[in-house]
Image (cartoon, rainbow, N blue to C red; front, side, top):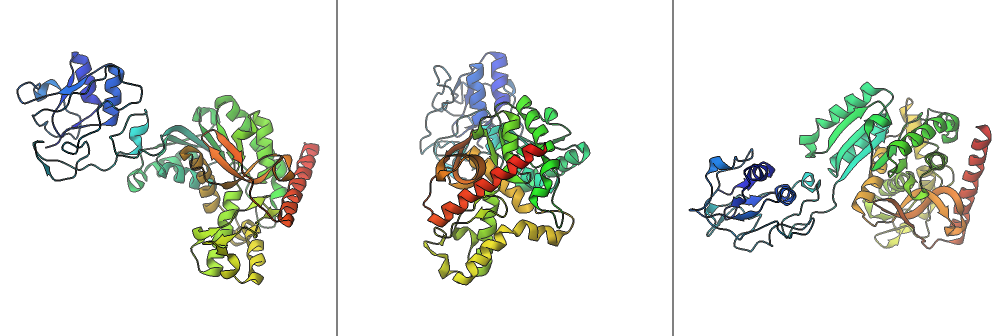
Length: 446
């Protein structure tokens, strides 16, 4: 049977000062190869007469008996950092063979599924022919273990791209309980990310990304602006704490009123504006796509549209460039209904609040926040809408509002200029001015 050699085998060989000898068809895990490089352990050939007895090198848990034979010698000497320790496998002795017999490999070999992203944690090389996808990153912190934070945390854990997801809430028991409940879903969703719940940003530890959902939620009859004074105090305090504990983090703000709270987080944290982003455009775009899907009986993801401007009354959805599979939306939804769909998308948050009566939307907002973080980690290069500090594009400067962007691992990569109709540019500029006025009122009140 094909054997799997793990880090325990490498460490046992290092303790004895000998090379790790493997047989034809054996599998050496990426982490084991990485560990061999760290410890200076050579991974070499072994044949039936020369390989050490099984008792000399304890097998890792879950491995099978080693098969005798010979393989190409692989050594760590002169290896480049993060380079594979073995040459590309030949068709006769593949590293990840199909579950059929292979001549010269000691009988049937066991197929293995592609390695879990857990194997990427230390930058271990993967077998040739496998696309390892994005590398894992360390920790993402979600501040606020309410419904939005819970959904965001669940989506981020499911992605299995982080070593750890930490939920932070002033109600530490709630954060810890949700985290434990979420950790229990690991075998159901097949992720290896650890999930933890704590009471403070400091206990969470240094993070690569911080999603801020903490704050008071809207109640029926309230506007986003009604939350300014309460949530400004919360967001400002969180931003300062994040700056102290995670000085290289990217902050994604979800707390309402979104545009104002994102700008407040930027000034409170002292971070470069490229590392403080607001989540609104992804959510508003999704709402519009979903509503067009319902109206036109089409798949929502096939709707090409983007929501810009303010997360609220000044939302701008440029219909001049919106389409479905390359055709005008007028072929999907009657033109007389299009503006009604835009209005409903603009007021969807309030519609959900009115229906729930005791809370606000959380499924789509939580997933939208997670999508922004995942776009950064994956460096997807997609164009999406996010609240960013305007840099003069579209004739707007020095105010946070929703604009088309590309994100990278360290935050904002670029603001993208897309063609808009003159009236759409005018509406976008008006949204910027209204946000600027509200920021002035907020500053005066404080």
